[in-house]
Image (cartoon, rainbow, N blue to C red; front, side, top):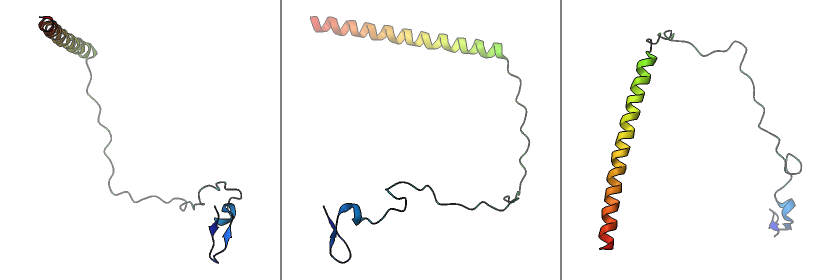
Length: 97
């Protein structure tokens, strides 16, 4: 399809858009930038405090607590599974009667 130009004439689609700055439709890359002057830095108004030391961690107590939490999780899952199994069995028995 030919596109009309400013004079009202039609040109083939490859010429209607005008010449590409990169030649055959390539990409020239981003425009050039200028670097800031050497030694430029934003003004510093406040100095951050040095980081604090973390308290000592008792790895044995952490592991024991994690194991207790895992046992509680497994117990809750087992109870929930048993309840669902009983409810499923009751629904199946009721459907067959």
